[in-house]
Length: 368
Image (cartoon, rainbow, N blue to C red):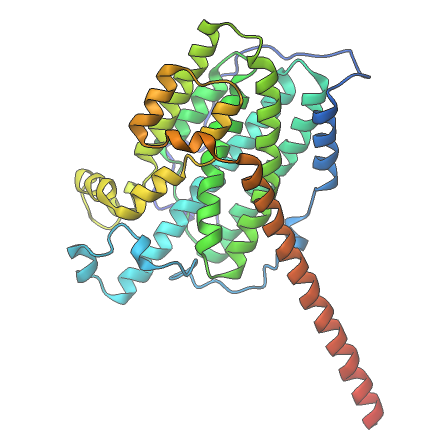
């Protein structure tokens, strides 16, 4: 079955073309580089993995309850619409929400892959090109995994959200080489990490938990790369250039905060667009989710040196300014540890199974 047969609404165009701008930059300096970035490049090589082998795809997923998260997280929960729904309708709603969330993850990962490839092309420093090449492979793996989950376990996809597509387009159309870093590594990856983490920490289902934990382990390196590269570069920029970057961050943050709420899902259940927006705006869960979305972005923006009065004012308006003091390194190390703990548990289970198999064979031999 074609992917297009699984879309709730077919994409307007089968191929989205973004005109390329800017220059491809070659560096002829092959023996010099920043020690921190080269160390991250080495880690990127060491941490490559195969989604077919590291993830146990034999685990069953119930499409009507793919995540096992509380129904209170659904926008319609507690409304008259929810009261009128049958259990079958509610299962379909859970399926649609999971499809919508993971579809946006999938589209975002394809965007990240393209942006990482653009960084390889346009960044002037060879050490950054090296690392971005490993990230391009990471993002390809993530897109492969999310696509497989949606095709094999959910059986439904949603088109890319208009505002996510808009931010991707703005990021890719800008001719300045640092903008794919800022748009992707800081904004889109930062938002994605927060969303991944919220589901990873609340799902009771092993397969989505594995997928999200392993993807987040990679993403922690990507954000670290963006922080290093942009922090070094933004120290050299004047006030006017920094303000331009801050305006881009402000616009992107408002766009994602106000528009990534799953209104498309409610429309597919017969709810008008305006009512769907109102329900999303007043959902207690979505209000918390919107704030948590910035837990990775705000401290990163502050760390790279974009912290002017206008940007701080915007974060006060969003109610997230205090997140600037969050310990981003601690969050990233926790992401790493959660993935490694899952590996330890998987290896221990495999070892127990092997021991049991040997013991059973010995027992059968003794009986014979």
